[in-house]
Image (cartoon, rainbow, N blue to C red; front, top):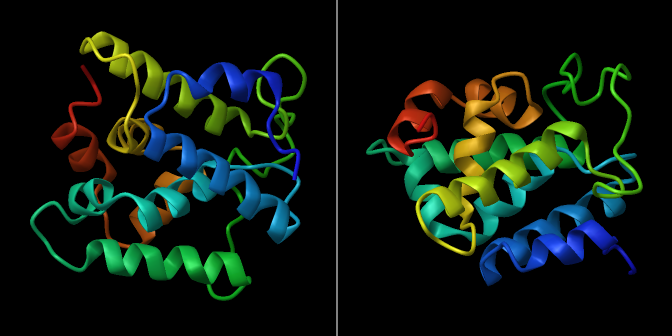
Length: 167
């Protein structure tokens, strides 16, 4: 499909195989859905579908939260239910990142991926995992993924704390 930009190839080495597959899946989802950019909700959706650790972290001892969250994400994909407007990712006030960053990524999505890599390096790992990206999504209270999590009953501040995102 030709959806890998130069920055995506550079990032590939910073992600675990599972996270790299989820990131590629998010881009495919955005293209398939006809979205003008790949946002944090696309990333969250593919993480939820592909990474059991991410689902366990979202549940946080309350089984069912991840199922409810995935239900909201599916509604978003099919254009049913909640209207996902008003977040910084679709406000039109910020450009889609092109060129040297990641073609087609929203600024919040690119920042979350960069933050996940930095988080992995800070703990001494070469490659970021899905929970690293989840931590960055939960930490950015203005991104679409955090909005969807909150609407599904996930306390994003508690999730970020459990994942040690603030450190």
